[in-house]
Amino acid sequence: MSAVAPVAIVTGGARRLGRHLCMTLAARGYDVVILYRSSAEAAQALVADLAATGRRARARAVDVGVEAQVAETFAEIARMEGRVDLLVNNVGNYNPQDVTRLTPAVWDATLATNLSGAYYCCFHALPLIPADGNIINIGMAGLEGTRANVRGADYYVSKTGLLSLTRSLAAGYASRGIRVNMVSPGQLDNSIDLPSPDEIGQTVPLGRAGEMHDIAQAVEYLLEARYVTGVNLDVAGGYRL
Ligand SMILES: NC(=O)c1ccc[n+]([C@@H]2O[C@H](COP(=O)([O-])OP(=O)(O)OC[C@H]3O[C@@H](n4cnc5c(N)ncnc54)[C@H](OP(=O)(O)O)[C@@H]3O)[C@@H](O)[C@H]2O)c1
Image (cartoon, rainbow, N blue to C red; front, side):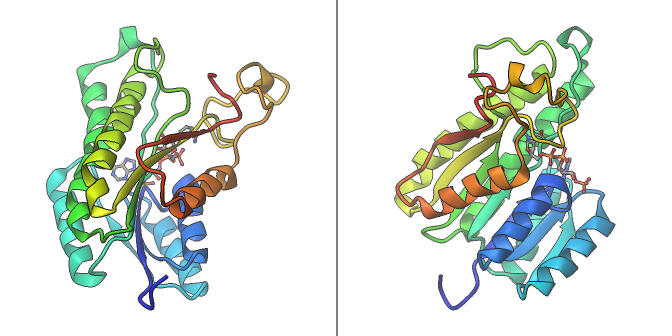
């Protein structure tokens, strides 16, 4: 690492997986900018926890689905941090319902947040990412463009699109030395869909829910793996194999 601390931006960073990733990245020496939408109190508490590790941290509210807000956010990052060594697109709303009850409003909101939002962040971050910088998108395990997902179709479409975007950006920005990858959880132990412990083996061959450190470990691997770009790593105990 250079004398100047690298800077990580984590969307949806204030709580749950995003929070865990912020703490992991700070432990690796990153200064962290937490992007959140409504969890101001949790974001400020995390800023304090990150600062206690000796790293610089700040939080900023943004709706990633609104391009003008994303543009403003990264203009501020350009002024304040001056660089983005790692962007983690962690926002991914999951409000599953049967496809026969899906409405255009829900569809638009999911795609705006999960897919367009990630693209807007990439678009505005990329001019600030130096050679050797990284983008890591958080996906969903078991993506396969042609599989039926009757429940949560909007979510799966957004995550499949995000995988396609990941690969395209990886190919397009490789010549600048920027790597773009995806890490895909299956059923985390905080999932709203989590089966009971005696049933989880039916959907997760390794027989347990994923923990946040499992996902952080994959993120850390990708940061180290300088010959790896354009991949999706399912970190999911075999979910949907
Ligand atoms: N949890 C799981 O079991 C699981 C399984 C597979 C994949 N994943 C993926 O892993 C990632 C993290 O999952 P999670 O369960 O920790 O996420 P989450 O709690 O559902 O959402 C993370 C954060 O996203 C932020 N957010 C939502 N809409 C936003 C918007 N328009 N603009 C800015 N921020 C927005 C929220 O911030 P505020 O709180 O500030 O509003 C929220 O705290 C997601 O991409 C998810 O799809 C999770």
